[in-house]
Length: 355
Image (cartoon, rainbow, N blue to C red):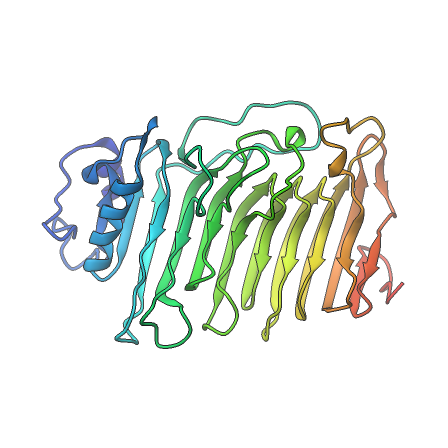
């Protein structure tokens, strides 16, 4: 309740009791994490202003305070959020939370033409190619590799690029750890209307292998990208939406296994793609493939080619799946390319083995 009250004051624009370092002094001894409002650093959510410098100034203050919460009131913020490197001395890892005011409405589906909402906290890419909308920079003085000693938490954000995106949505490959909750990463259009992604862009790149990587995903959606999520190691996800991506989940090389609860993949060319040796499990892979009369010349690419695309047989996995075809209903179709070591079982049936 204390955190909600503090954020409420910040979002309302009232005079919150914050000292020079950004720490709340009205509840001394209760709230330990500094809270920073991007508006106080010059950000404007008017869908016009380039807020890149304001975001950087706010993050600089968060890091100087040893970590904390960067909060964004509702609005449409143009610009990029680049988390600067956090280096030695270790083990002084810090937590950086980037938090929007409202949980986004995840507009996605398999039919129709619906506009995306303009409500909530929206971070929108600039109209030029470049780095991801949100990214963590590599650290030149890291204790190993180029990984920055930061745990990134993203919550209640709508992250937008453009149709046939020219940049990644969120790139956290150089962060040590991350958690995403209530985040919608999209290309600014309803996924059914999305053009084929011809650039190798990703909705999310998780912390890379060999860096104490940990990724936690809860209630996140990815639409319109070449790849929805690049899954590196130590990834745990639940309630994942993948709408109209060429690859929904792409499993890259990992030493440690990943686990997913419910994953909903709809109108993806490949629901699951495997590009590196990776052990994983999916407790419920819910798939909807485009049915008769549901595609046109613009979105024919959203026709499913393979539910699992693992041509080099690099995946070692257990999957429980369910498939629905649009305008038809529940079907027993399930298509695979390779995947010799992936055990796939239709819910309610015996294991399918390697068939």
